[in-house]
Amino acid sequence: MQDSQANHLTHHWKMWLAVIAISLAAFIFNTSEFVPIGLLSLIAKDFGVSEAEAGFLISLYAWVVALASLPLMLACSRFEMKRLLLLVVGLFVLSHIGSALSSGYWTLMLSRIGVACAHALFWSIATPMAVRVAPKGKESVALSCIATGTSIALIAGLPLGRVIGLHLGWRISFLSIGIVAFLLLLVLVKSLPKIPSGGAISPRSLPKLLKTPQLLGIYGITLCLVSAHFIVYSYIEPFLMQYANFGENVITMVLIVFGGIGFVGSFVFSKYYNEYKTFFLNFAIFGIFIALASLIGAKFSLFGALLICVLWGLCITLFNLTLQAKVLQLVPVGTAVAMSMFSGIYNVGIGSGAFVGGIVIQYLGIANLGFVGAGIALCVYIYYSKKMFF
Image 1 (tube, rainbow, N blue to C red):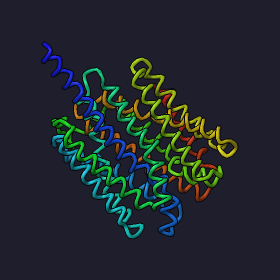
Image 2 (spheres, one colour):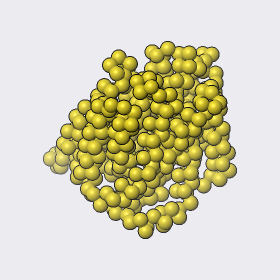
Image 3 (tube, rainbow, N blue to C red):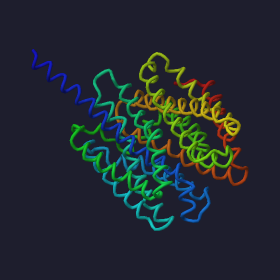
Image 4 (tube, rainbow, N blue to C red):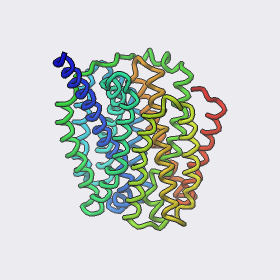
């Protein structure tokens, strides 16, 4: 009896160790995705390009993820998931070494395309893997762990990458991410169990998947609201520097606060999501609208800017978690492919937002970023509140 209980406890902790390992991978991947936001001015200055041109690195990265997610996942859907994840992290490491050694704007862009391909596969399998290895009944907690990894990337990864870039150069920031990813690769080899493929899906079966109205609704709302978010967030560093006149240390603190509130969002989601599913999505969408519309007042008060970032960071975390949970609920078979489509559409939103944000800066001025993003978020809220289709 005691041996049986001990074995059960050991198995239980191994499950959580696997979830934590995947969450650490989420931290590394999201740090890499977001860190150019904190280094935008440095990269632009080094290569002699405008901030809008440097921001195109974010757009291209996101568009590559969007285009590559589904084809890569279809090609790899039969792979055993642990092996696939290790290959993905290996590509991620090599691409970051390429970023650190890049001799110009275009070679940096090429290395970021390699990172984007790794990213496309990672976010197709990370959430399903975490849910599958978690103890039964703890799926929402596993999701919140992944979100915590994302939050830590915003709290520590992005600001730390920015600080390293300010003092040692942006290339060292990318190299540091590659080194940490290599160490994580060693951890994943030891901690992850073998996870069979969630089931191969052929391109012919995709039309059936897309006949689910609720799933199409999720994808549409994701595309529009993520675009609204990244119209502003992609340029938050120059916005706070040029419009709000904040110093470098203050900007770093604001970014930390934005990421830190993600912890609260993850906790709230894991504890109350099952009881308040509809409220969570309503609150997240409307809260993002309010935060973006309020950014115009950031220059008048640091405390006010921090409050806006608290609301904004909380709502985007709840939005991301709620939509992922709904995809997993709607597509229990072939989840990895459904998530790859979600990841692809999410990244179309990132790329579109960064691209539109660059146009707004060029023609309307950086101060108007929040208004444009808020306008799109308001349209999403009005549409969702009328349809309420999931």
